[in-house]
Image (cartoon, rainbow, N blue to C red; front, side, top):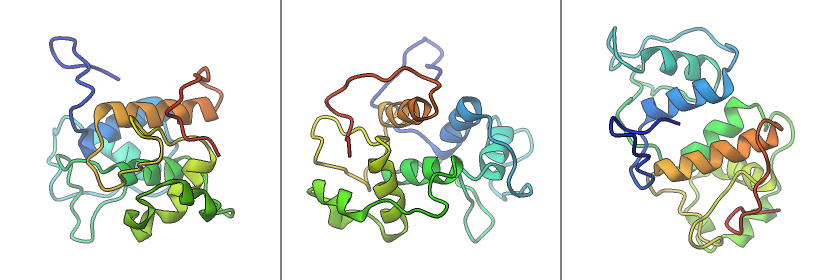
Amino acid sequence: MQGDDAGRFNPAQPMTRAQFAALVSRAFTPAPRRPAQLFRDVPAGYWGGSAIQTAYRGGFLSGFPDQTFGPENPLLRAQVWVALISGLALLPNQPGNLRLLERYRDRATIPDYAVNAIAKATQLSLVVNVPDIAQLNPNRVASRADVCAAVYQALVLQLRAARIDNPFIVRP
């Protein structure tokens, strides 16, 4: 993950959909699973255009019904887990154990589209909740730190990164 022009990571800054597309494209180099899609709001020459196509074709992200992508829209925490579970094909035939969601005090706020993916992400230890492990905050804008932690956990799952003993990783 790259910092800004001054070399700062800016962990509290929100991550946009285009930035996330760039990150997952670099981290996972997804193979295409669907054809390219032209998005009305991603002009030719846009800095993240190639990464958006890679993330889209690899199943990490989707566009909207109006043929837009929303590259500068902030990413929600729930969307991060949905994207990782989808892009890494971790939920094909075995949904996550929904009882695992009982550990989150705010489980009632999980969007319907994200319930199975978040259960699976919890089962696979992709969820990192700082400072309160029982507070999921699925509808909060994902910070760069939130995304980095989830992507790192996905790399651990793939045995591409060392496991870190961290009290904020939600374990099944």
